[in-house]
Length: 469
Image 1 (spheres, rainbow, N blue to C red):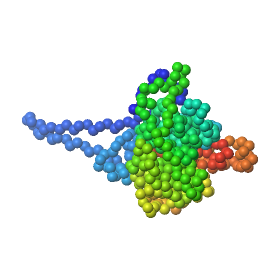
Image 2 (cartoon, rainbow, N blue to C red):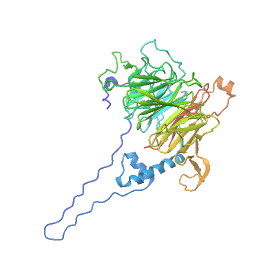
Image 3 (cartoon, rainbow, N blue to C red):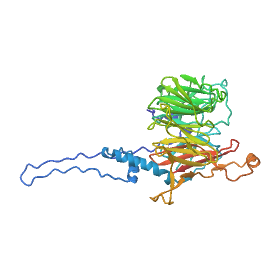
């Protein structure tokens, strides 16, 4: 649905390459058969050959990479094989660190294509990294229209990046982190900036409800619903003025709702994370006062309920699994599971005491939840078995020996740390500091995992980025 790029719309920030298209497998040739009517032996019709069922993980993954849908007769088998692949992948992953220079703490990330990841940092930098070459392309941030808008502190950074379902638009923060910025993909041309009558504090979370409707959650305790009309990015609006400066629309939210005040901690209603259920058309939100909130999300937001969370300290991440109709909330020491339709929650919380540094990022895929901790490690939890994945008795990935009983834990590398005066005076010049894993995202067709973060103490300046494959 993206229009073709003209010469006037090319710019430096659009150096992002379009991902390699997926190949399609050749279709089956029609089998022609006939019987001879002339004198001589009867020619028997040749039976059409059935496709060979290659029942190995290698052939299945190759088929996924090529975009094959699989044969109908193998649907059940492929489902089982996919689940097996999801279980085995974590123990096969190996790290390759990426160099980001002096950037400070990667807070958000999303795959754009098979080799490029877009990231946002605490130093308010939006950039694209090529995971093959390591090349970094910075994306200019959109600016508010006038000085009337309240400027946020420059150190708060970009906390959220989300792509719409068709991967044609990207939503993130603007130069003013209170504003919502929308870019077109794959060119990353600016489309619009939500800086009119919007949030009064930093945007912490973003979730797309459809290709043109996006919701943002802010530290000011509000949730805003924005609509990106198709004429904003279909070529009817000029992208640059006469001086070649990028032009974009300035929009206001279609609806805005405030988090209800809790009696326990009324001053801490900050919206920290959002997750959208496409199946139920519902939006879940977590606030730092220890509550989970649920809205019916249509053209406006209608609050359905608010629940007190079992663990109330540092609830900073939220994810949703459509297959299980389940929300997962990460806190200082636990991951809690919520099914808003069940009065009694049947899945017990999982404990993640990694040095008391908490859960910093979460993601669901099928029945496996990936946990990024504040202590530089990744953990993997099987929601069906209700236990963490475990290490194998042998270090060889091809080993079929039994499990050791120890949690499978991937420990991330050192990254980069700015050894400044603060580091020397307050942290005693500690050479190694574990990185908090603030963000991670999977590229499942390529079986790759991008992980980003940086030192947990707010005063320390540093970064970590790694490709696990």
